[in-house]
Length: 288
Image (cartoon, rainbow, N blue to C red; front, side, top):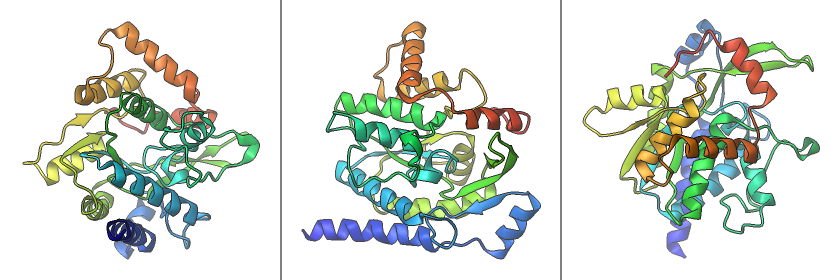
């Protein structure tokens, strides 16, 4: 029992450090200059329902601790329709909802401890990143292979106002973390690594790659293309990068395309909100 109490205390302390974080004056001034906003999704002072996100992250990390992962996948920052709502990296409410409705008792999120913010019509926004990441991770589950731990190099939401939507609400565009934000994130990454016995780190996207490969050039950290870049081949490139690690997918292009089609059928095509963001931000986001 003592070990379990210690594990809970370690995770609690880590989440509490996230909850208490606030940007300093230098970062606030830079965000104002860049016309970006920061939301600490784990802080009651910053967002509504922060406790749901903290609780979700606690149960996710506790479950992963029990699985004893040896690999860590590091992404960029919480996405508007993914981690920003759930508190769990690379995870949308659609992923949690599908698992909780599943008859598969071993589905990762088939657990009443995980909560969902959106209740309207029981329909949840999907997210490109989440569906392709968990589409691949669920293949590991089915084959009895160990899941990697998931995290973001910058654990807080970085965003700016987009264009007005049909309901007159203003959409949010995900911001891209740069050096100063990533320096903040590295401190939390180190704290997370103290809670786990990670042996291999993989970098999902150019932000994680730039930050960690420049900061730690002697450490081998393979790069995997981010699945949500503004390119039709991004999901395929992500799956190929994922398969270079686990070697579980068919090698023929046709079978890979069929797998991508199946993920879209299971988790839904890109949400209308994401399509709107693509159009409004198309010229501003560089390709990886």
